[in-house]
Amino acid sequence: QVQLVESGGGLVQPGGSLRLSCAASGSTSSINYMGWYRQAPGKERELVALITRGGTINYADFVKGRSTISRDNTKNTVYLEMNNLKPEDTAVYYCHAGGGYWGKGTLVTVSS
Image (cartoon, rainbow, N blue to C red; front, side, top):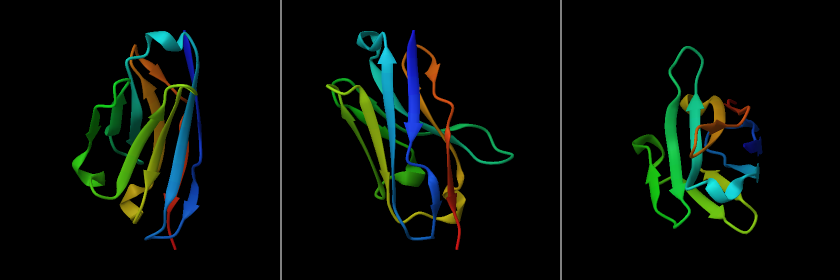
């Protein structure tokens, strides 16, 4: 089993930045990839970014150029830095790890 704990959400003004963190514990050696999904009110959960253990990265088009995902394998932690945030980025952001593991989510609210 793998446990995922997110942190770093909160309220930010449009144009601002946030850094989300997700720490994995448990059977972390089985994790091939980690990343982030988000779910806005009334919408489906969608991929934001994923990174493999080897460093291969996949971004959703809506965050390309303004977000960076990174991973510290020694700490079993994945980070998502988001810049130039927009109101439409408001959502609950969920950490995800290969094998079907999900965190509880952290709320990001972009509002003035």
